[in-house]
Length: 171
Image 1: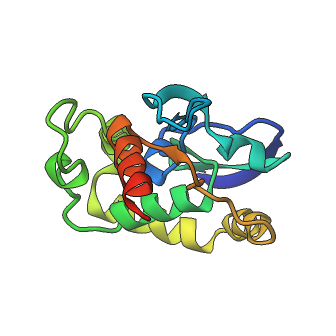
Image 2: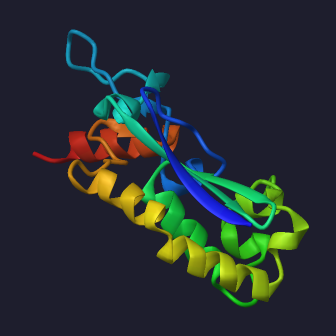
């Protein structure tokens, strides 16, 4: 059995794919003190991502006993892109440059075993691309696209330091 439904939420509905699609809840921020000298970057500043919309759409898919949820079109695109590859990419290919938590850190490792066969993935991807609810889900975000990057907010301490150095080295 397969069906899909949309639900609407005032708060962003975090999904297992959200972080991999670029969603951030917290970030590193550079600040200057009163004399203009750079302070050490601070962590845990709330990222402005969740405040950019008053209403979020959640796509819930039920396909042959497998439940999937998507909060952004970027999540749906990433899911389809990875699941439509044959063979499925390995953890090393999905999480390059990370020595810890691989491959168990990726959302693909959390999917049920029955989602892994090629025939199932082909049917699932075709359904995700043709379901009317998926089209409606994408249309919801086209009028006011979601931003994933914001000026002055960085994903890591080192990105924030690099930005400080670039800012101070320019005349």
